[in-house]
Image 1 (cartoon, rainbow, N blue to C red):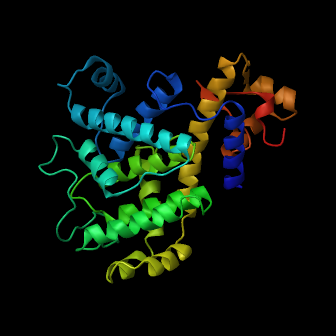
Image 2 (spheres, rainbow, N blue to C red):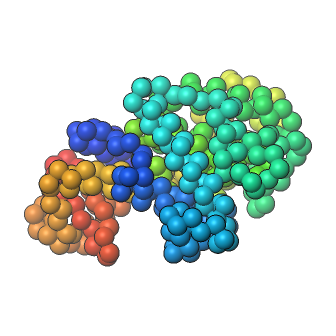
Length: 318
């Protein structure tokens, strides 16, 4: 049902004028960009307090520890998602090694000696069972790009996103910044299809779920990476790759992002959102059922404080 509920959100957003441009002057997009930036670097173990985060972004306080990680990610994500939006508007997909290298350069600016360069030699990912290929990284990335471009419009999108993301992270092509590069690249595809970005939450339980989901999808990769890059073998392996857990993480993030954008647009058009208690009376559900409807994806809603807000027309099937 995830793909059904995602397609429904896509249609609702389209009926309201479509995906707004990912610009910081758009309050909801700014919220999503800030949330994703802070959480994505947290996944890597880089922590910044909320007040410090705001000071870095909007007051130029570069003396705060980890300020370069915040600024690098935010600026890179902002530019790349703008490019993704142009893909969406023009119904195309710009994808190549230059784009991927540039994302890595952006997130690692002034952090490493040669950002954007593929690693040379073996790499060990701490805590993971995957053994990324040691040589020919340019050929492996060309294979990744070929498969990703060919299947952009072919597969159910949650499945597609989970497969390409798990493959990129398994390849681990750079000396550093692979996680941040892969998450920005992942959201580039979401925006290029007209969806919101996804935030992978950086708290310990969420990070563990994310890493376990990636490991679940790695089941066939070690044997494959011992051979040479081959498109047909890759396609065969990806057909069998389990991505249920990663799809669930992506759907939750998309649900939250898409719902914020949809409700924001409706409010700008003059629609009044109802609290969970008010909405329950209108649609004939109990108040306790509202949260379950949201979690399942059957209700488009936003959480404000401890209360969900929505509209009677935003129930699936209404």
